[in-house]
Image 1 (cartoon, one colour):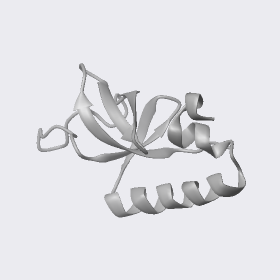
Image 2: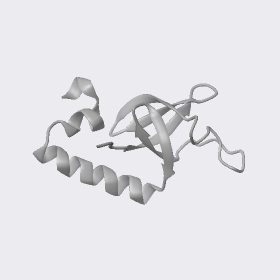
Image 3: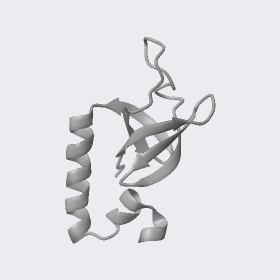
Image 4: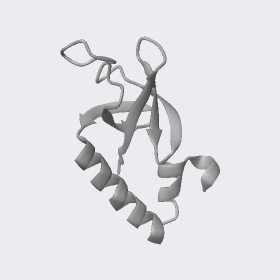
Length: 92
């Protein structure tokens, strides 16, 4: 099973690399599959992406991102292993 975690792009680091925030934890994520800029040439800063194994797999809207994060946080209450996805390995 694959789980994508919603994150918000907060900084562009290089050609295809960005810093993305997930539940207060910032991670470096490869944007090759979605691009660092949208179709109008605007940077993806503030946009939401679905992250899996260090890659932004797709763009998602804020409502979907927040709903998914809420569901994952609820799962965390009964399955602590979900915490590593949300809060990083060091918070397990």
